[in-house]
Length: 314
Ligand SMILES: Cc1ncc(COP(=O)(O)O)c(C=O)c1O
Image (cartoon, rainbow, N blue to C red; front, side, top):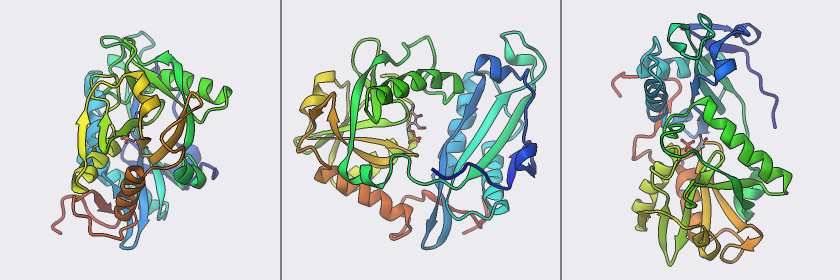
């Protein structure tokens, strides 16, 4: 993996040097997990650098904060501008983008309402999360012994830092046991999602994915893949997925900003389908990558050019 470093970070409306973007050790977020973030990617397309589904990500950021009664002093449009400004300031053509809102200094009581709200946009050059080979041959995964949070515990629709303690446990356990990723079940034993990815399965030519009430993050790549699947004429069904459906699927794949569309070749050492990337997964991978590389027209309006002004007439 490349070193995580760039030149400038956006902090509360100002571009500051990489090493100057700091928070105090008594920041509420460090003690209680009270921060909300996004993971977005900018691609070096044939038309120049473009950000994938920028507005959807900044909207999810504001909504994550709202669930926790936190109003950042910047609108989603201002975050959009901040993202583009930060990429330009770092002169990057392809990068990972991490907007972050955190509860800072002011109180160390559990209620964060008296604390400052610090906003950052961090960008850095980044390659593939799972590696090139995995995108072709697929990854080996397990069902995690850790479950996703029950309803009324932690809201999984919020992309909150605290939720990622659950993801950390899932991912660490999977890797410790020789798997690339873990799939978590809900407390009722149904399939939820990976530690940082949504999940799709293919059976008899139909695509299935778990619905939002199965403790998933409402993934933006998940929505994009559902749209592309419709474009390609596949039937797509959101339904509760039983664990055993993982073992009998023709194809399985993850979706996410980091992984894009990543085939799964085995679950708990049981081969999925033919044990390699299936045709439906391959067709969705290439439909998405053609858009991300700018090889086809951006017919869904998902790409935002870095050298553009939000809201400007086309
Ligand atoms: C827990 C979890 N589920 C799903 C996803 C996929 O979401 P997206 O496609 O918006 O990146 C992520 C990635 O952020 C995640 O962390």
